[in-house]
Length: 276
Image 1 (cartoon, rainbow, N blue to C red):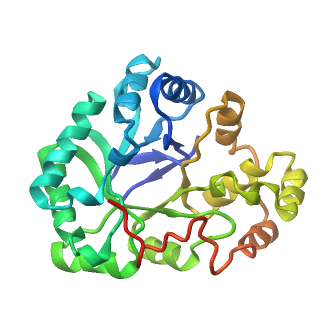
Image 2 (image 1 turned 135 degrees about the horizontal axis):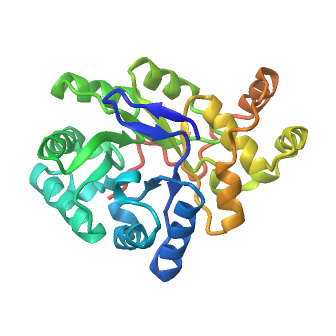
Image 3 (image 1 turned 120 degrees about the vertical axis):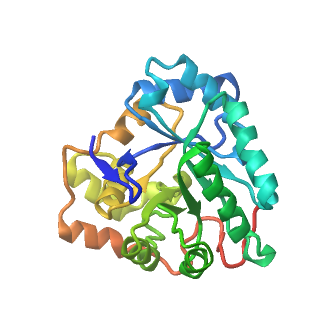
């Protein structure tokens, strides 16, 4: 495994495990097998309604809680300051954890104009010891600039949609210039046609890996942190087996060339899309 060090000192593996839609006993088992396969960074959210599942998996897994890095996210419907603090506490109760390693604002919802207030709540939650590191999801540069202007504190992570059909170059440059680690949700395009793209198949064959592995390795070489999800043990193990090969500059450029202006999987543009 290789690692990133956040601006606040927290050390993260260069790949994590997503838990979206992993619920019930099958979800618990999938998360346990992911931990057994070597994942230590686990990504959840209040809106996924599986923080309890995540907590149970952590309890059952053959690894100490202190060796895991657990992420959750605040939904837009609780962005008022006190509601945000109460929701973070509720998240911890659901997961039966004393703290989250990372806690993020899930969407900016700019028309509601509450994300600065919610960010102030995360700053206080960090001071209270409820969370170790704080960040955002889907925040455009202008929203992050406003956080800095009004609170003086920048997020250490910005989790955004990122895959070969939408490589987010401008956002990545901005994040990097501001000491913000870019995390990738939907890193495999939610298993859409990108996994069957003949150009990616050709590159993957060249390195004797599968298309998912070539995409995840490409994202790591962009200095981002992908968080793929899979319920299959073989895929979980393959998705983390990325550190014994390196993609050439020419092949990196080829994959970068696949990006599309309208490449978002579900047209969730943070400037207009809202989620509560």
